[in-house]
View 1: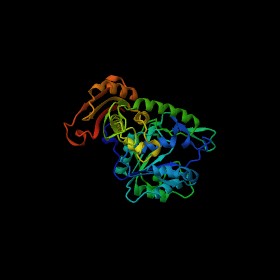
View 2: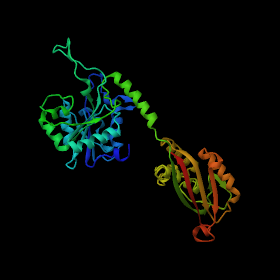
View 3: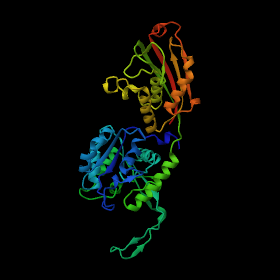
View 4: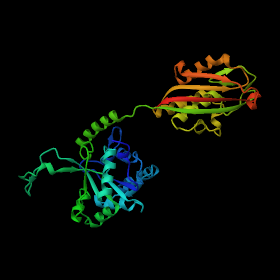
Length: 395
């Protein structure tokens, strides 16, 4: 399976139907926890995580729309109110689509394990044939009962029977015809039923048995097992990432000179909102840059008077928390201090040990060195100190 196989066709949209009341489950199943998260969130991420969709619409009950609608919209989803039947809910979601959409995927909010391959494959098949439905071969023998349900009457040929799933995908005009042809008030189990009345045969897209719809408590147990297997198998291996940091501070009398958490004897120190530690500042910016998390000024703005004079070791602690939340671990840091005075070579090892302690690193993973500006510029005139830093992390 190549990246091309997973590419979503242009001008595609998805409608996620999450307006059910969960009568068989006894509660709203789309908000039941699966792998510690509401099932609907996992279903939505199966689509938003693919990228390439022009629009994503989630259809919610009026109560949940009032409660959660703003949150979904903040995440880039359109929202629509559900109706009394599946078709009514689909009509509502269909009305939310813009005029540029050409292909529509209709998916159950309680099918969180749908794969990228099934979504992309069904949309592409619908683009060619007008409509496509994912399905799996029936594994059990199926029998037809008498009208009263008391007796078995016949056994259909299992080789031609398939269990259909979602997303059921359509060219926009075909789905419009389906919605127009559906009888008001009648509850269809899926919209592709109406295709048969229109004489349209949807293409079959072979799906997989993991794409189950969670309808009963037993389904939730099975889905939980599949989710654990999916997370175990598909967890991406950590990748090496790099960040670059830079900082400069003016040297003034009456301030302590702190570099890498080490106080150095000198008649001048760094002017700044914090202790002005250019070494830790540049290293922290490099670490944040490695995970695309901005820079320290975002978390410690110079306009915040409550943090005046804060130790840069506290800034580093915050950065370590951010790295942990992003599941990133530091591999190494390398800092180059540019200063005309004082001479810093005698402090290399002390600064290294301090940085290693603050960042909770082995000493072998910390490099600190210094260069002069040969008398050039503000640094060369002893008016400022600069530090450049590079950091490597695994994420």
